[in-house]
Image (cartoon, rainbow, N blue to C red; front, side):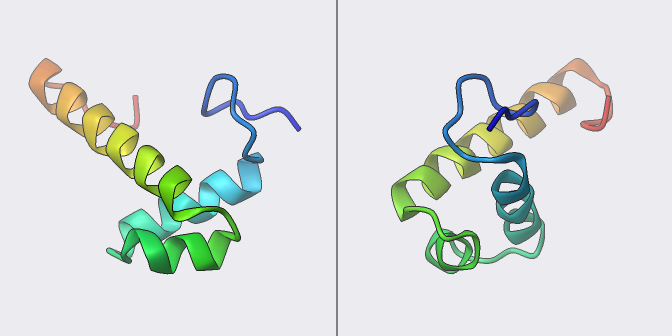
Length: 66
């Protein structure tokens, strides 16, 4: 169960992609946790990590996809 997006994650890539999809659809952490079948706390941690990644990409002046 290796996840190339999150280092040392116990969440599979498929579930991580569901979390990213929930984030992009502006779902709450609770709704996304239900969708991905993971805990709300894990979803909150991933949401925070995604937000930090977006902020760091913007501050560097690059697009988040790079």
